[in-house]
Length: 222
Ligand SMILES: C[S@@+](CC[C@H](N)C(=O)[O-])C[C@H]1O[C@@H](n2cnc3c(N)ncnc32)[C@H](O)[C@@H]1O
Image 1: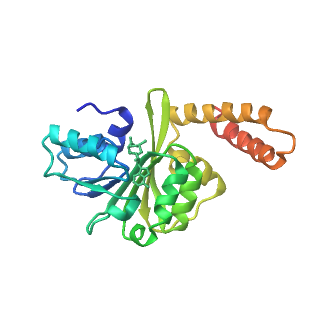
Image 2: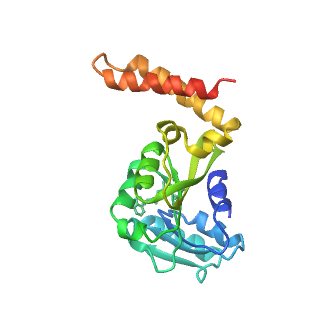
């Protein structure tokens, strides 16, 4: 089955021999890809809605993977089963991801690896998970359909991060690279536009945005 560059990159970052819970699997294309990698990865494909799960079921049946992929309907981490060591949550807003983790902290505590790809509010996700027993092991960018996505891998453990590390990502700051530059050039542009649109009484937002513009300029200058 065809898979886009974003999901392929996420799949390639999953460790061999892991037992994954894919929260919000939608069509289950990622889960089908994970099994096709032949890295002894077991998967629970879960979604809160019946519609996506029906689609997932059909896709899984077409690929004859009914025995390999467990389908489960439920909200967030409620579909956890004993032995799951990796949770994948991708293609959702950061606030939704935080909500999913917050509403089931007991289950969250049992997970060794979180592979998270939020569409927005990445900094909030990093701050929340690092407050709740995780550190950032790796960060990757992937460009798909002219959109650049962040993929963040969290592992159980504690590490302290600076404001700058939370903003850019501690691993991104070390690795940088062309997608880092392109991503933050876009972030810079959107903030420069935002500044011109903010009403006069939004003083704190203006101040914060100006500080971020300064920080981005410092980081991407040659
Ligand atoms: C935009 S799709 C992303 C699908 C896939 N993960 C990806 O990266 O392409 C989001 C999916 O998450 C599901 N979803 C949203 N909130 C959820 C929750 N609290 N628990 C489980 N699934 C959820 C939606 O039903 C939808 O199928």
